Length: 435
Ligand code: UD1
Image: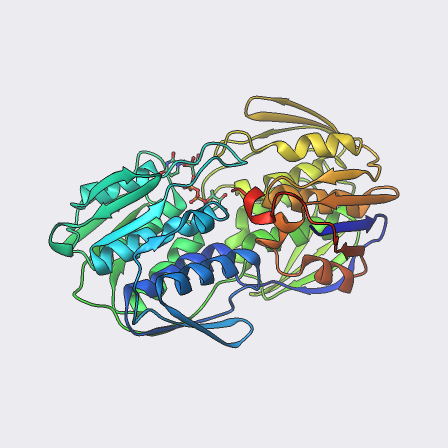
């Protein structure tokens, strides 16, 4: 398993380019299952979760061509298997995104139920209840969720999500495109990735209105066709690099991003004293001006502050002057990075869904372990400012969602190396990954 060795203390300076959003690319790739025609997706990030989704598509019989590194041409003309196996679902929960499109196009699907997860219980009950409401017979068989539509076609329905779910909204949206009649999703997730998927679906001939708002209306159509689409920039990677620039007291130009999608992240970081300038519609400049200030934070569904930026914000707060309270409202048990940060000298108290960070503290390099994707990013940020060397184990977590983070950081001056270990662990990476 690879490790990162980081020597802290370098102010990052230069330009960094943001990759496409993994969380948009995944549902857009799954949407290709909805049509026998080719879907061409541009700006796909080169990260592990995308490779997993590609494997899933190929496993069911789809063809995926990559004429260029970031372009995928997907043809699901010859789907033979209507199922996502346990081996893939356990490594990536977003594999459940295959359920809606398979059920919509073929009237049947089998997806292994995601198991335990490192960031709290993440059930898919909302997805399943919605498919039942659309007429599907949904049951559990040998650890798999099996769903069957009456006479092979779902029927439109009024779906009221009691809790906002991003992939739940996307799954139902995809399922509804080929259903008989109209589906209305109430209390839908408003994330930019949901809107991006809606745009792709409409290019394929779907009739989706309101993606990106709390109410989405979908008129089912008979069939969908091919389309081309460019994936939006990754707002979490953008936020992570803003923190990297600020925390190292550097100056970074962050290009190929969408500042509009990062409004709340930018606003919160400005509250903490970070200087962020919007250079143009796709470029931000972050620079160090004043010392970092402590500012409380509560994670919320979009347009609120993203839970996927909570860990990185916590690292920033270890450098702030004063006490900050961080409340995690989306996932239980999403403070696992805190104990690793404590080992580096951070002063953090956790109680239930709250973390109180006392700053500023001098972080000291240590050997730490990444526990999930965003937790790993927070440890990299800590390593960038820690005294001495930080070694981060299990960086496969970060490879799931950040494209070549060490290459991008090195290009702006960071002292970071990936060290490949030849000794193989008794557990393979895929057995250990959760989340
Ligand atoms: C997506 C993102 C993930 C992000 C999360 C929250 C993708 C591929 N992943 O995950 O990066 O952290 O949104 O912004 O887009 N819930 C239920 N029942 C369900 C579904 C969800 O109770 O059927 C709960 C979850 O346990 C959680 C909350 O709803 O507490 C939000 O989860 P959800 O929005 O579904 O997260 P994901 O879509 O899995």
